[in-house]
Image (cartoon, rainbow, N blue to C red; front, side, top):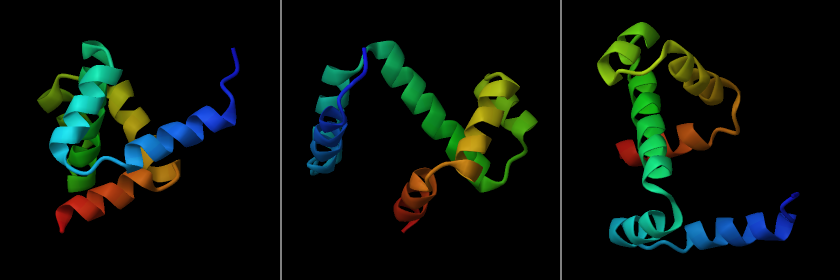
Length: 93
């Protein structure tokens, strides 16, 4: 089933309305399965490690992840829309 573009826009508006970490937690816990939340947290950890300059193999060992997951994260950081870089920079302030 193709999701109408309007649903994506509503979702983006929903996430942009989050005011603090507690609200974000409530929303994410209710919207995602525990596995989806774990996967999202894992992905955020690996992009932070990539941003710190740690080599991919060391990240894989440290986080106990496959090198393919690390490589995928690296590709998103290099060729994605820049969203991850934006938030990594924002959270460093």
